[in-house]
Image (cartoon, rainbow, N blue to C red; front, side, top):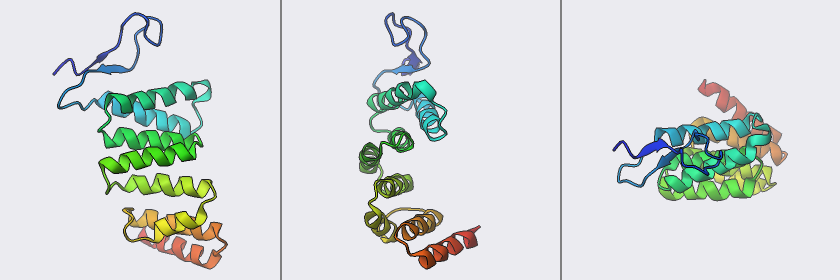
Length: 171
């Protein structure tokens, strides 16, 4: 339906009447706004590349708004988790990734966000256990990278190098 995604040009909107780049989405059975998905990706890339400058808060708000507008969308939720991780808000990134996991338990990006966040929080043993577990849905290359980082952080240099060799062998 053409009203699913339209520009929000209501007076008093975030830009004081200026046309917002955000779509105003109306609930529908087939709500799948490509613009929302794109904006959440832009927000997470902005944070991860350090180019948000003074707009980081706006990008975070935009990413959260995308989740509010389409709460059943795995990609939007994982992009919020990626944004939060890049913004060094690791506890929030883990929570957002867990929310994404509730929608798509087999999602391989979830483990990357949680592992990286746990490692950044100094929860190295938990991160290692997650990477070692065959129950953790993660791509083979990401599993080797994950283990290499965890082993290195734990001072297990030989094991870390072994995982790096396995990772390089996949190329």
